[in-house]
Image 1 (cartoon, rainbow, N blue to C red):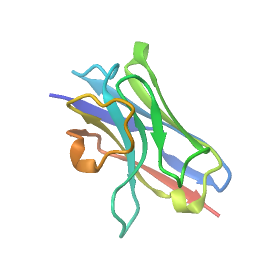
Image 2 (image 1 turned 180 degrees about the vertical axis):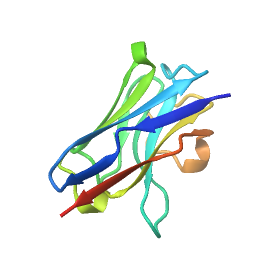
Image 3 (image 1 turned 30 degrees about the vertical axis):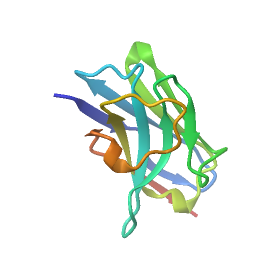
Amino acid sequence: QVQLVESGGGSVQAGGSLRLSCTASSYTLSGRCMAWFRQAPGKEREEVALKDSAGHASYADSVKGRFTISEDNAKNTLYLQMNSLKPEDTAIYYCAARQGSCFMSALLPHYQFHYWGQGTQVTVSS
């Protein structure tokens, strides 16, 4: 049973930073196609960052230059470093993993991902 568990969410003022973590059990993240999504109230789930199976990263235009996706293979953990946070970044953030690999990929739709965490709330106040 693959389990993804996010942590690191919280409340922060605009301009601040947070680092989200996603740890996995019964699943090795290294070499996987992984992504971070977010969903704000009343809005569709939005992909913000993807790490392909070779480690290359892609970002939504809305977060490019502010967010960084990375992984620590020794800790089997995926991260999302979020800097210069804005109120519009307020959402529940989810990590997701795809059963298959992906290479040099642009962002993928949510239905391409098979495993999801429970989400962690990020609230940015102005």
